[in-house]
Image (cartoon, rainbow, N blue to C red; front, top):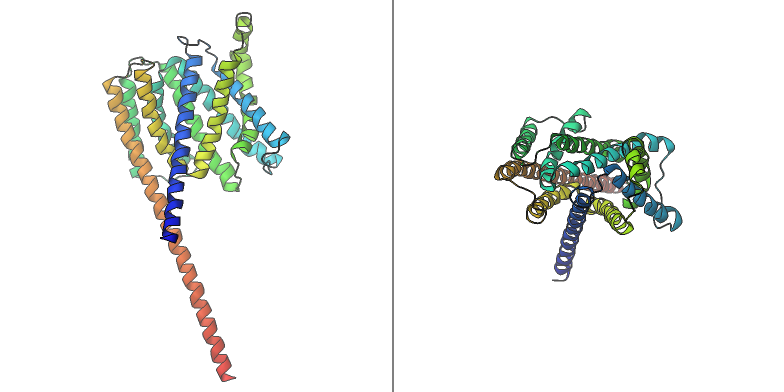
Length: 350
């Protein structure tokens, strides 16, 4: 019972920790989405400035990450050369800024529930862009799955009661930029052996993201905010707590992926989307039609099958690695035995 009990306790502890990471990420992601919707929606808090809101988030994250790395020295900065920073981190920061800008902008025009349905296209975008960058190989079965997901989302869009073409364009653009960012992280950082923890990721990426957001902000939102400055008072409670939630979510994302896997986050994301759709319908009173749910149900099945396929592929890869390591160990033992046998023969002849 000793070793078996200790092993069982360890397994149970890992399971509990994994579910805790998932629960924390779902809660924070849920909170940030609903909070952003509240701030940006003209019928609620009525502050429709998505670039400004995103810049506040990035400035807050940059400040806390800088304090953690440079002032309190809680974590060590990564050894990134200027060339690596400019060719790897900066493009990722640019894509992140575009993704956040467009996704926050979509909340002005679309319901929370419909945005979650459109986000089901993320695996389609990641797989398609992965093929373009030769990170993934084309498979007819996987592409059929992607088409099924797209078909389900198209039905959900057709059944949307408050469909807005501009809002859909913004959200699809956000999905495309986010998918490209995820692929580039694999190509530019992971392939070079660069692993950033949550704090150092924000330390390097958030300032770059803030700088890129400043360019459209100067032309799009700054002139309007300047005119409204006399009637607007910065609410430190609203924007402070909102930024704190965004910072915590960034940490939770890296923590969840680092301690579990990206696949776990994908599965948890499906659960979060259903919760948001239910919340949007029951609390915010967004209209969710039967055709919406039918279309998203089809997309959900497609995403579920895709995640299942990825899990099976990961298991097969792990089994192959174990088999290879076992073969290598067996080969070493045989070599050692052969070496000992040869040594004994030499001794007897002497």
